[in-house]
Length: 347
Ligand code: FA5
Image (cartoon, rainbow, N blue to C red):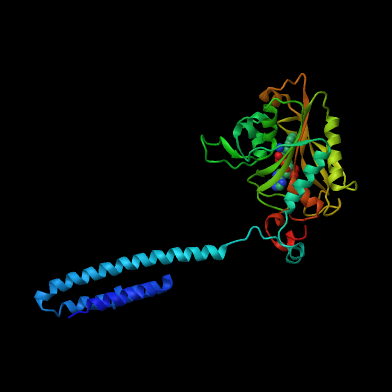
């Protein structure tokens, strides 16, 4: 005779004694596996007299089913317990107050240099009477290009190697290549005058090198008021570069071309790596370009419905990462994104 009662009782006891999922799987293969007690009972069926075999076979199936059900129940019980234990182990006490002495000695995190630079630049411009505004990082072709007087197929689109988003019609949604679209968003509101800076992240298909990243940051500036002249623009650039870099750093404007400003200029400062002597970072010129600027083009005023007979304005846009690089003498901008704490802890 096959002792079904003991098989079931022992099996059930072993299943409920399994303390974790590993132990449970071992017990399960001991019971249900090839060499397990249920398979052994199955083999014994063959030795029974035919009139006993049907009843014993049915009994064996019932025992197997009950043990399988118990296995499944115990497995889900242990899974719940394992998950609860994992959550307990991962628990972070966010209310914990770390004393300053511990913070200093273990060097817990601080703001990234680019964020610190953005904050410092905002402070400079707020001190000069500017407001701070923001715009979205994903933009439509209209804001990033067309409203800025850069129609489709305009050669100037090549100045900003664009990442397109797969949204809507092809080439209608972009990751903004500059912060200039925020100028359009501000002017569209129709609340004039405007004296604003607009910091934020920008994206270009630029190959990273000593002065370029594919994801970088700019501060856009826009002033629209009555009687604004190029002299106001030049004075603003000079005031902010002196306030941020100190009076021993020289800046200069050079004629340039941007479709949304006329006249346009680029502004540069003395390279702080070589102090003007020429090095790898400034490609031997002794100057580093910080940004572009100019008087708002009447075509842009027209696109946003601002009356150019009454209002005039200037705009500028420059690199935050570039400013951090020059202020702290970082010869290669890629260090800002490599997340080497030995570098980041210095700032
Ligand atoms: C522009 O982006 C214009 N929108 C600036 C402008 C605004 C002109 C308003 C006139 C009026 P440009 O492509 O030159 O211009 O970029 C401006 C600055 O952004 C550069 O001088 C540099 O400091 C920074 N910059 C540009 N590309 C990168 C990059 N790939 N990595 C890091 N900084 C960059």
